[in-house]
Length: 247
Ligand code: CAA
Image (cartoon, rainbow, N blue to C red):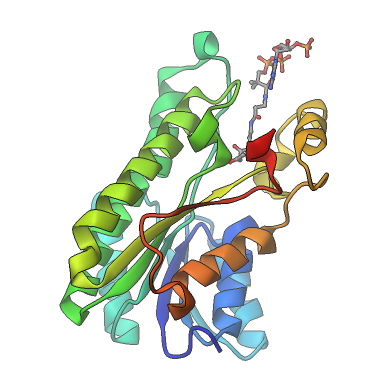
């Protein structure tokens, strides 16, 4: 039990990587707040966790809403008494070439993928400071390290998340809060289902391990960064991409 007695919020946990992370965290002993705007998927994640003997609650949230994020942190502390781990996993795409990208597509991806991380971390950090420590894990992407054709908005947000991670790692360390990020490559989730087959095939071929990632590949990296096994890891951007960064 690597997270025995810990309380964790995982955003975007109604499906994909977040869902897998919520299940793994619960299996490792954490009480998990399954935070997502999709009630259907979120409730299902909670039900699966409870059926497996774990503890979890669903919290409906749009992470781009500043005050809703504050309420979520308050509610978590009310319900479970504290907050040890925040995984800023929620993210969306609205891909398109620069010259075709609408202002709306830019705004919504920045609001969820960048501002959403600020909104949750700001209020979580306050709660963690009061109790003397915690761990924040942010989802960036290989796209946040190298850019990607058709992802102006997403790349900007994910580059931004790396900046937030390094800044908070310096700023919050003295308060016992570690901040790290995971940079997934191409992982088999509903998000990549929307990518044209031809492009996914190219990415797979460029990956030295010759396969797309699975949600648990990323969830296990979150688990490591959330657990005490990584107690001297701070400000790290951990690539989990089958070696695609090398290509
Ligand atoms: N590399 C190089 N050239 C590309 C390209 C790429 N990745 N994508 C498109 N092009 C070029 C090609 O020349 C293509 O012509 P062909 O038909 O000869 O291949 C031309 O652009 C036109 O492409 P589309 O017909 O696809 O143009 P579109 O306007 O319909 O769609 C697009 C553009 C939305 C960017 C689409 O190509 C697309 O969805 N690309 C995938 C973007 C992507 O990789 N998203 C990752 C999402 S997963 C994620 O974000 C998770 C994570 O963290 C990794």
